[in-house]
Length: 97
Length: 272
Ligand SMILES: Nc1ncnc2c1ncn2[C@@H]1O[C@H](COP(=O)(O)OP(=O)(O)OP(=O)(O)O)[C@@H](O)[C@H]1O
Ligand SMILES: [Mg+2]
Image 1 (cartoon, protein in one colour):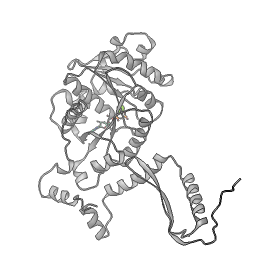
Image 2 (tube, chains in turn purple, yellow; image 1 turned 90 degrees about the horizontal axis):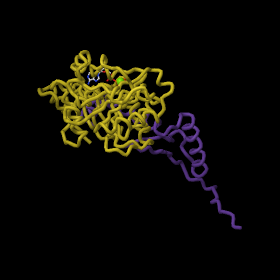
Image 3 (tube, chains in turn blue, red; image 1 turned 180 degrees about the horizontal axis):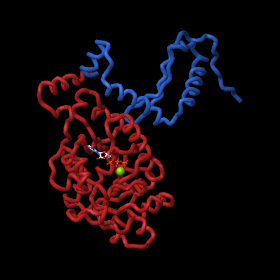
Image 4 (cartoon, protein in one colour; image 1 turned 30 degrees about the vertical axis):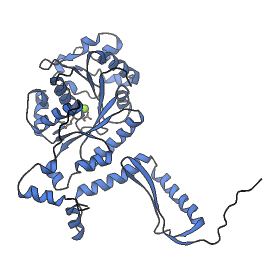
């Protein structure tokens, strides 16, 4: 954070446009680079939540699955607040022949 | 991609109008005046302009098209610069070439040029379609030109992705049309913002400079006449760095003295 960004934040001012530009670029490039269109992204998000939700009770409102990018590497970042662990899940024991 | 010792460098950007052709012309002349035998190849067949920027438009007899068709020899088509004989241009042919030109054709042309030159600069068209892919097919390395604007940086990123998958390497960055004052007040993406996002080494930093337009009007690249305008110096330094010389890059945030500049600089201090 630069001094200007700090002052802008303290005064509740709109941040410098270069900062906005940088953040917008980072977001849009994460998507460009992953080549996932928004529909696929949404579908993947739903399925991830579904799977995780089988094991733990999630706070679905606060959950967030997004792509982040840094140094040309893109990561899928999931932030899923857990309400409680489900006690009714049974470990799936692989069937022995 | 090619086995020869000639360096074949693609000049590309994705977004149009960011300064590819201007860089090709100025870098070509700068390299040539530093003793490097340089060929510049206009691969923008749709909208050719490199001849105009070099002031060679009236001396074109044959083009890449006749060379490919076998209607003339390469030497007949290459236009040598009168004031800088180390530089020669291979003009783009008719826009209809776009309909049939293949990556192999570009490789063939470049293969013909290489034995006679130390460096071949290929001025790519904007976009990431066939025209760009043809131009890229013949290149070993690339210079990506961008400006500190969101759309140009985004498009540059697309191009870098394509070059990566094609094994073009190294890829270096030239940041063009930098406005120091706007960077100081953080109303323009900073140099490290752009290099961080694109993760490329910076080969050059060219300021916004009216002299670029003046020199374009005349058909005399800035690097031709010993101009000391900021862009001329920047282009000459790109040529030097390309040859391995270490030349420090200017810092746009330290361009102006005085209280206001100091204040702007203070505002950019990284707190954490
Ligand atoms: N550093 C600069 N300062 C001022 N003007 C510039 C600078 N660099 C380029 N320009 C101007 O920007 C315009 C576009 O430049 P140029 O034709 O080199 O871009 P290009 O990337 O080759 O465009 P295209 O994609 O159409 O081939 C020209 O009018 C040129 O004079
Ligand atoms: Mg051009």
